Image (cartoon, rainbow, N blue to C red; front, side):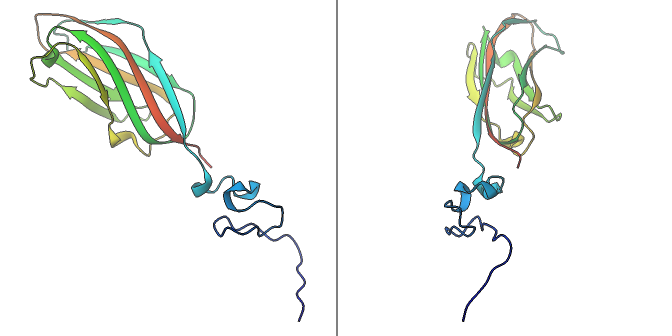
Length: 162
């Protein structure tokens, strides 16, 4: 009994066998580079450290943006925030993605503390496209004192688009 093959034998990307005979198996084979289970996430970090005064008792607040150039799908996102304020329960903080998803990260939590230096990890952006302009909105919702947005950093794990 003999077998004769004609044409190229394709690589099967999840069987740990060098199906096409080129010396590479599964995800190490170039033929599998765009298979979803072979893609690896990249970490992208961007910071906006332009200080902005947060006006007292102003419903519109202030906005600050970060541009993300790396395209892909977000698998996780964190936002490190540094705001100086004498009474952080005055503050409302929102993050808006390039696709328009808006998430309130902090909403006048009554703890009576100073400043807002915290890292948030909202899952709401997972699965969204990463590239574009991300907008942070900070509102001082009560009178009596101003604050300063000192800086903020977005860090995200992005899966490349096959």
